Image 1 (cartoon, one colour):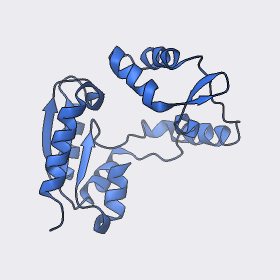
Image 2 (cartoon, rainbow, N blue to C red):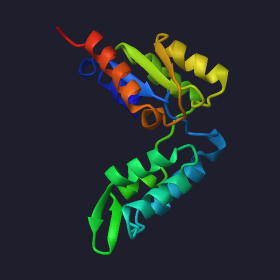
Image 3 (cartoon, rainbow, N blue to C red):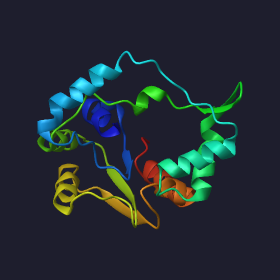
Length: 180
C-alpha cells in the first residue's frame, strides 16, 4: 500500500519504488459486500500460527504455496522469515495479513490514488512477472506520470530471484532523488 501512503502523505515521500506492483485491486464491484462480510467474519477468529518441525519443512511449505518461487528463494524466505518456538519454527509475519482486507478500491479509485502521487516513481518488474491487463497497466503507469520502468530477468518475486540487481536499481534511484 505504498502508493496509498505516497498519495496521502506526499510531503513525506521523496521517491517511490514499486516492485511487481502497480496498486491494489478490489476485484469485481459486485463482490464488495461479500468481501466486507468475509472481513467481518474473520475479525474475531483466533490467530493460529502453524509450527513447522524445521526451517527446511517451512521452506517446503513456502514452495508449495508459491509456485513462482525458486527452491532457493523458498528456503531463503523460511530461513529469514521464521523464528524458533517450542517444537520447531513459525513464521514471523503477522498472521492477520493473510486475512481478507476490508479495504478495496475500484479501478477509477486506484487511478485517482496513482495520480495523487507527486514524487518520482520507478517500477521494477520481472521479465515474466507482472500480469496486469495491458490497458490497466498502461492507464496506471500514465496516472503515475509515466514512471521509470525496469525489467529484470525473473518472476513476480524478482526481488528474490535477483536480489543484488534489484537492490542496485533501487539504490541508484534513491540516490538520484535524495534530498541535497
